[in-house]
Length: 167
Image (cartoon, rainbow, N blue to C red; front, side):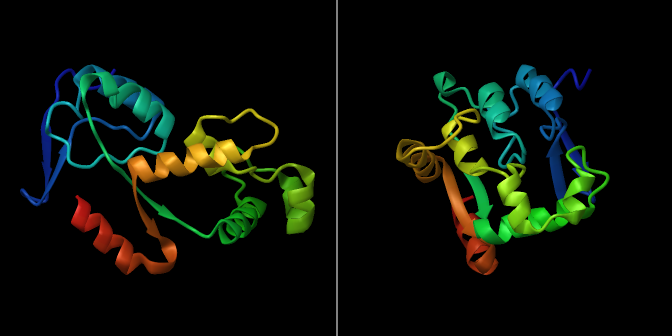
């Protein structure tokens, strides 16, 4: 069911403070909506893996709630190689496919099992089109420039510096 009222939870004495909502799941985001943690002024940073649900339920632009998100981007080719290697052995994952164990990365890409511009699709809100266009890319880039403070995995020191200066 979740909490009935919004409150601050203290950990480690007073060193760590959290709001008593969990936005790591869609269910948690829906519970949080009724408590309005973003509009309350109690939240400085929220970590949520589901951008679409988080923005739909908690960042209602009609209420004047303005927010910036921060993201750390990784080279897309290195990310794809890492994902392929992970999925070959990650039997605990719901998307685990034992057939990947015997595939090369080229086989995986050609099989249609590899991600297809996942981040661009999420940012422009189109998970269904069979192919993406330059317009999809333009929308994704616009979303990044308007809503995100961006860091790169290749330069984490600079990334953290950017995040600290913005938040």
